[in-house]
Image 1: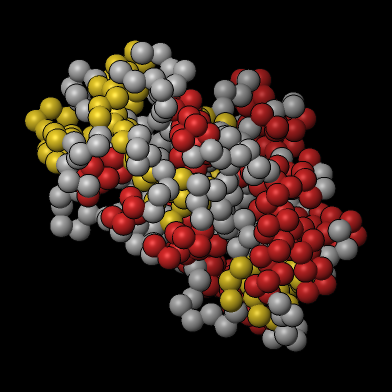
Image 2: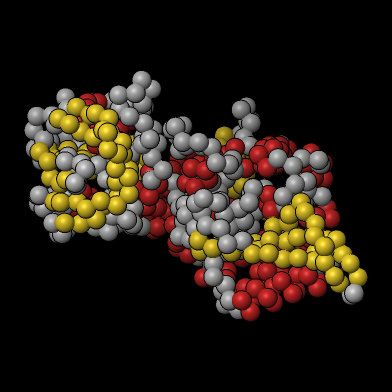
Length: 509
């Protein structure tokens, strides 16, 4: 197990991914974690992440400096390296010449972190401060033209620092450097698999839940479906899944969920028709954050109402993932800005009558799919494109109405049908239709029309942290457009979104 201390870097989750790719479990914790908690976690190593602050700023994030006296190997990255050096008696200064982007790294010592790397290798820099003086026991192991102290180590105390970011693809030998820290320095073993995750998590669920019952809001998407099967594996009939028809779902969603979970997995399943409870408070609402929070709170209220009908319920389960937490707030309260709230994490009331259980909250989407496969879910479910918790409400820009829902639902069904028919579905991370709050002039049947505009969005990605627009064939886009315009009443124009993330997000709201 590797502990990652979150100093607020945009790359924190990427560090976690790189560690897990080596089949080593890791966990991200905030800088204010207590030493006793670190000891209970018993990590083989600690990674201090980068961050946007300067260590000499008044409110810069700080971890207990006694972390360097625990006899646990530590790797500091960017801000993490500077914090380690500063805490141990070194000096960090603001530099006149900042360093951002690619740099040529000259390696002087290839015995540990740089074992097996080239002596000159590209690296990705992103810093305005630099180390000017090292503490006793440290030596420089690499430098760039602008940064003379680009990597350091104290081999006796197993303390290492990298001014650059080894976790990003722009540092081509970064994976090897992290691998060297994991195995040459920390002596980790490749024991973290989905099978081991199932056993560990199931044991934790049994311990936490005890004799109480759990309800789960089952949407039919990958996350909630995998969470349901995992919980069912752990506690069986103590779990009741609640499928809420919130009026914001895709076409034929209810029938599909009922068939899969009630018949195939024999999971306790309740259906709630709550469309009016969601649509009424959304009337006249156009702000996307308000939509998400209204929907999130309504979900919780519906769950709590259903829980009253089931004796002994003490927990509400959700399929929250790492990216949900990242985009809703800086992970664990760091300095990053809110991008958007997710209904899983942003709509919870401060006083909730049920305890929250989130068995997938430390997993990325591709890991959830591997977990689903290990649990016996079919590929049709595992490879299903992500669907937002607020449903079609955030794929309608502007007010949500029954008429607008009907338009986007039909357009989305046509899009998915055509993409599957042409064998592109599994190649994409996500594809969906968006309805704009605009109308455009058209000509249909020799008559002037003034109708709605539908946008098609299709992206490729590994984990939704970054994404690129999909280069779908022109012929396929043409068929999709033709079908939507001809079959969906009220649409006379279809456009294709060719924006990547960043700077855009995948969803429009």
